[in-house]
Image (cartoon, rainbow, N blue to C red; front, top):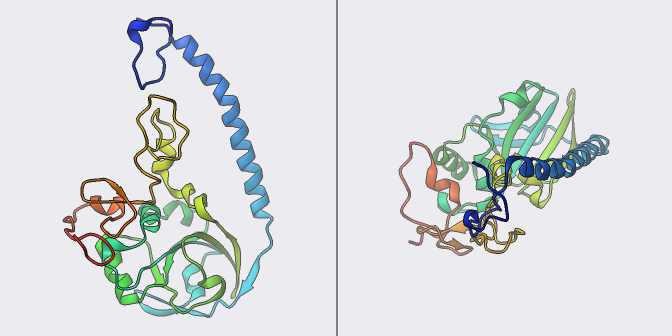
Length: 259
């Protein structure tokens, strides 16, 4: 049985209008034109990104990983290209008090097999002391290599919170690209899937039809308290840390261990 928008008995408050399949297909095809244009615009941006100039830096500068100090060049693992996520860090904070946005991003970067198949290595960099970083990586169950770039300046270190790409030519290393702000969303598959749903991400800034459920979160980089309420204060923690597979929940919240 199909229905039409003019049938008031089938209207569902706070939902998209109910229509027959042909009407839905026509609307879907109209949106598809815009989606294809968006895809092509993204292709053009990627082409421009590949043509950016690059900056050479000293690949012998040492960073600290699970095996101790190593030259930055080792992060390439013999491959020509390297992508890193630069994870922000709060010194002395409990695990659940680390950067909310970085935690969300890193949670979606658990496997680099497909990058490796294209000659690209992956690592996570952060400015934390290695003893703190190692404990945090173990707590979260991260499987990709992490390195501390504490005290390292320039392209190998620098500001945190971004995805950054590098190129190697023998022993020469180059910075080629870095994101800003929402550029990190490209690795967050959850956001892409939520964008396909009627209610979207549930974030307060979204353009949502009247009557739809209101967004409760400013964005997924914000924190929630133990009851799931949005907060930007010391009593919150990043969402993914509630669902670490095989790990018991942590009772204390916030950057200073408040409850």
